[in-house]
Length: 337
Image (tube, rainbow, N blue to C red; front, side):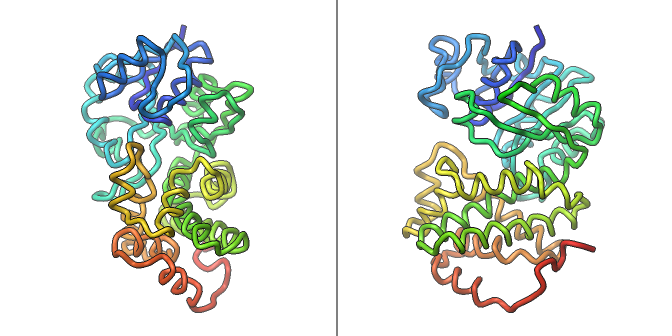
């Protein structure tokens, strides 16, 4: 039986572990919390992060990072802001030619690096060809329940991406391949920021027209950023881009959209972060996104609006008016060079 290590037992990591286990893979799931390890191994549940879901019995949980990393395929799913520390700790235990898969979505605040770039900075000796990005429109709850989902395995080496596809693909867990790992990661990071904006708009009852405009103009911001970093613009029209963006901006299960809704209701970011065990990636990513926009001279008005609400304490209504009153311009500015 083939095996895979999954590093990170949050909702998304656990859902991916479940999907892998359904493919008859032996799955080792790493978690920090001893009580979570015991619950998975003894009762086959993860009530902390993925309640009301029964886990397959071929998932074995551990708090021993060496045990979880000792596989030919190792999937990293910690929050992006913790990926550096987790990968550094796992690195000595990785097999020499292990395929490293990252499903974290975000941009590291201090370095402005994407997940695959964080891995390469921590371990320059690891060839970029060994890293594959797994992303796309996917709610953990639905994946865990076995509902259909389409994802993208993106890597510099298409053969390595195809190995991940072969490992995980199933009728209800379809995996496509791509060679644009940078674009796929930009999509996965920035769609969460736009989802916060859409939640804020919905919370103000601005209407479906406004939501559609935010999604479309948000896609333009995502694409501008990707183009500036060397991504293929077509990636943003696929599953990693418009697919994940639409899901996260409209789905009731979206943590980032819910975060925006609650901001519009008057709650503060500090209050909302304190209430949550699960990480709202868009809250952290927007800080990195604005710094990246400054560095690369990228026009990102929606991201800057979300930043103003999250980090400058500005009211949602005030920032919405500021967005609406911006100067007119051509639709494709900054996307096509």
